[in-house]
Amino acid sequence: MNRGIISTRYAKALLSYALEEGVEDKVYTQIKQLFKSFNEVPELAKSLVSPIFSHENKASMIRTASGGTVSNEFDRFINLVLTNKREHLLCSIALMYTVLYQKSKNISICSLVTAVPISDEVEERIKRLITGKTHGSVELEKSTNPDILGGFVFELNYNRLDASVATQLKRIQTQFLAINNK
Image (cartoon, rainbow, N blue to C red):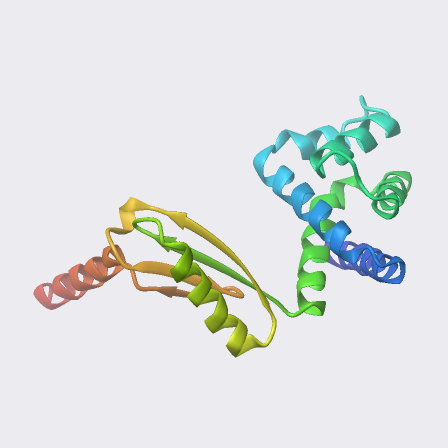
């Protein structure tokens, strides 16, 4: 069976159960941390599929990767995943839960990369603007990258606007080379 279908089914089941129990926000925080841990520690996925570790060891690793103490509902879900030997899908399940939760709560995911740090005032203005357009809440990740030279790179719900100086210079260079190669 397709990994994506299985992951989606598990994520939907977890979200449904968490909503029923009123802990969807808590599970969202924990599962976001788990997904972040998968990205930051590639050995986690390898350890979870290793036959060397027991069910209890794997559950403990998942709890730790999820922020330490997890809700009872999420703990029950971890045991379900391990019992059904679906730990190899846990990263995909975490991603799908995150997407489903954000969609259900109308949360816009934004990323802003600038050459220099932005002020809190600018951040709040961006959030207000997006909130006004989407009528939902905003999660804004901001970072700096001096390589863009100036301007910004902005992503909103997987749509990208690259207004960086570095990209503009590359476009000019490409146009210049195209004209001179004719």
